[in-house]
Image (cartoon, rainbow, N blue to C red; front, side, top):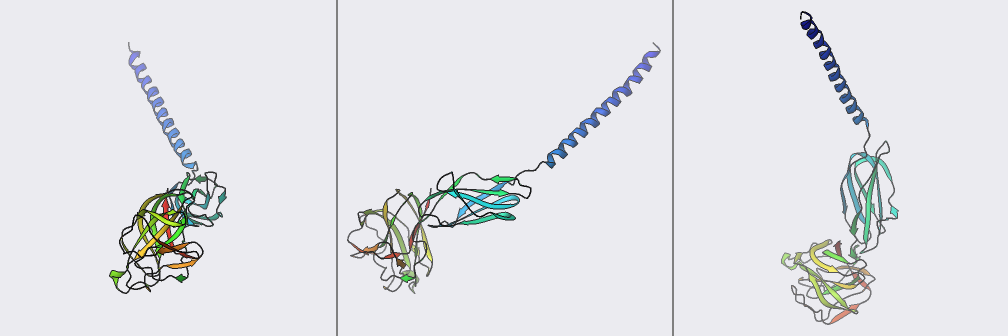
Length: 285
């Protein structure tokens, strides 16, 4: 019985030492695991991918990364892409590249790519945009007598799609603000002439020598002809007129049209084969 306390006392330090060793080992393992995790490289994180300034033949793609990396885009009319931009090797976190040589009213697929300094590559998911339809570069010549009549330009879709806006580019505007109002519309093509009304916009105010844009909602079929129409309330035939260029088919309502009213059927039509008015529409898929 005398030895019992001695045994208990000698046992406690052993348990205590083992316990301390176990704790130390546990801390060392955790610390080592943390150091290992911090040393593992990760690819740049791609965010804020956006397609902007989409015209008939060009567009701009931008994105950001959380680490400096290079810049490149793959694009094409299918998810197989088939084309890519020139690699920009300069390491940045804000990326932007322009796409050119595109076709009008065509759905394009694209994805962005960024590789960091140690070779870790990130690739975004597949995205799409739809190029605009119509004349997206203003013509050098100026039309005349565009007020109080429906002035149209014929366009033919490729992919079709939902129209989000219509735009017109004009020259000098009326000196009186109240006579700078304009509207735009879309008519079906009935053979070689405008037919029935598809949709029209609200009223906007023209700004000289600029693209003037109004929202609209309409669904256009693929590979189908339509007419984009413009009317204004200018006080004379020398103001509020569209810029134009050679090529395409355009015309006007023979009997004129009171501003602010779009008839359900276009009516009598006078055509002109050469000038193409500076009108365009934008689309979203």
